[in-house]
Image (cartoon, rainbow, N blue to C red; front, side, top):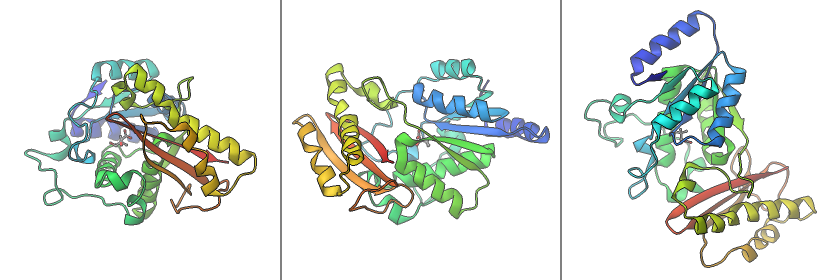
Length: 284
Ligand code: PAF
């Protein structure tokens, strides 16, 4: 069932809670693919009821980003959800989420601002304000749905770490369930933004997973020095790849590592044409 109104959803959730049912939330921006499906499957398996939110959240897009062209495929998304056993697809409009005549600036809207240390690096460096928008909408979704469990993909590992931190710092009564990255056979991590890639660019996009898998192999073979591990990446890069970052950081605190260990996550962002892709791998 598709629900567009917050109040209607809250009513339904209230009834479930009265019956003592557990509720899982899978927050998404739609354009659902097998990566989202893996989160949905986990929620359906673990919880009595599952809500999938489909909301292209305007406040997490920076000026000049792809808000307008972000794929919107609600019909196909709800079909996927129905077949996967989802109880409610919550698809509010921006007006429903942020109010009549909303003005998306923190002069007019209460924001949840994650700690500077977590956002001044990796994607937060080029996407200023992005994680404020993410935390604000996720917090709103938690308040509306009051889920027992919420499912997030490790593909957006910085986002996942920041959301865990928000939940801890604000004592939000929800358990965050991290879900592994789903990849195409080629190694390419699934992402709604892969839709922007031409077939040639899709080939070039394999550079992210190739670099990460190679680093993991080198680490497993005993190379722990981060500079030495970083150096292994350069042979994979060519003129089609604009490397934004390749960083080794603590899996929980995002502190930078000079020596890799089992808590080290390697983060990469590469621009291919106009398309910015991210990926990561945990060295363990
Ligand atoms: O990861 C996403 O798709 C979004 O950032 C999220 C968590 C649904 C918030 O809009």
